[in-house]
Each structure stands twice: as C-alpha cells, then as structure tokens.
Image (cartoon, rainbow, N blue to C red; front, side):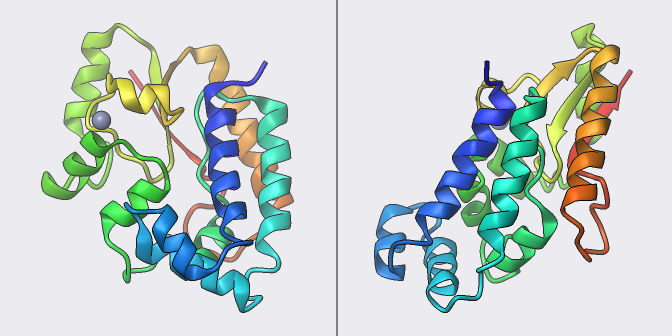
Length: 194
Ligand SMILES: [Zn+2]
C-alpha cells in the first residue's frame, strides 16, 4: 500500500516529467500558479540541459516507494538546483505552489517570515501529546495540525520507533544520489521530538 509521502513524491515527479514533453508556453498555461518556473523547467528540458534529472528522479522515487514514508522527502538537491527551485528568480509562491505546498502554509512562510520550525511549532507539539513530527525538509507548515499539509504528505506525527526508518531512508537517498550541494547532506526530512 502506498503512503501519503510516497504519493506526494510520485505526484511531484510526474509534474516535473510532464514538463519534459511540452513547450514553455503550454507549461505556463498549465501551471497558472507557477508559470515562470514551469516554463523555465520546460525550456531547460527543450535545451537538453536536464538530461540527467529524470533518471535521478526515477531512482529517488524507487527508493521512496520501497520505504513508503508518511511524509515526502525533499527533492534531491541536485535536481532542485538544476530545475531552479533554489533560484531567487522565482517567488516563494511560485516555488511553493509547484511543490504542492498549501496556501495557508505559504502565507505563513512569506508574511510571518517563518523560515524555519520555530517555538510556535514546538509549543503545538507539546500540547499535541505526540512524540514527534516530521516534515519535508524545506517545508514550513503554518501549524503542525494543518490538515492540508497532512493530507498532502508534507507533515506527519511519528512515533519513536519510526524515526530510525526515516533516517535509513535519508541515508539511502544520500548514498544513491551523491550531490555537491553544500547543505542538505542526508537531510531530506525535518524531525522534531518532545
Ligand atoms: Zn497550512
């Protein structure tokens, strides 16, 4: 059975793959919330500058499918760099929409400048009675109880026993998909526990 994290990752891979076979104008039309980023990616595919990205995504997807995590791991940093996810040329909303982040969370990120997991999230964890929560690295939820984020496989509560498996998944992705991005070494999830 597939997990929310696996489905979420699979959707994202599909979204990127679809851009490899359409032209930039169509990409723009199909992605009204991230027109500039989508047409940029489509253009890079056309210019054959992303030839190594799809095989990497396939490999990461096969690893993610094997582990079936409750939350989607961050995209391989090499891929993110290549397709422009880390680029300053695109707004937070364009990037967030493309990555399927809920609007409420993007608003909290941009308007309240919540660029990392903060005390409010940790206080929520305290009152939740849960042991820990995990998010997709790079994604900051508006609340750890955000239904949309849970539904989209971007955050989940986890038990102590599940944490080792998430670490193992991170290790496996990092080992199979080496990259030279200075950050994000073996860092595909953000985990906070009480
Ligand atoms: Zn939210």
